[in-house]
Image 1 (tube, rainbow, N blue to C red):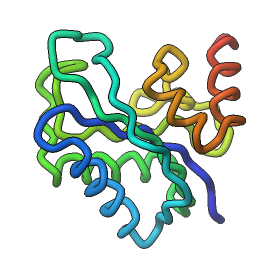
Image 2 (image 1 turned 90 degrees about the vertical axis):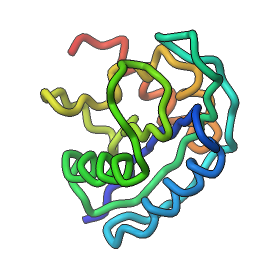
Image 3 (image 1 turned 180 degrees about the horizontal axis):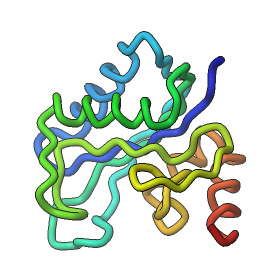
Length: 148
């Protein structure tokens, strides 16, 4: 069975536009994932830790046969293969790929929260998401208003 998921991608060191394109290429090469739509790239100020370069951010929608945790593992593997180092929370990064929503599932596990726990607070996630699916962006905001 195929599911739909929405991902947020960002980068702010190296060559961010090239890294976003490379991440999308790698995501689409997975036989269990098809890239369905992508937003434009938006340049945004950092969130959380603000003393770093601006980010290039975008969103994509995908169709996948992977379950949410399996999709997370694939995306983390792509980040690692591209050189992502996780040494500072909200710090500079070569690539960041987050699952924002997966179908309309609400999920909270130690590894994954759906919709993404902070998406509703981040215009750099919501604005690109609205470009490709306004209904999902609204659902992410509505979900955040409900107790989990």
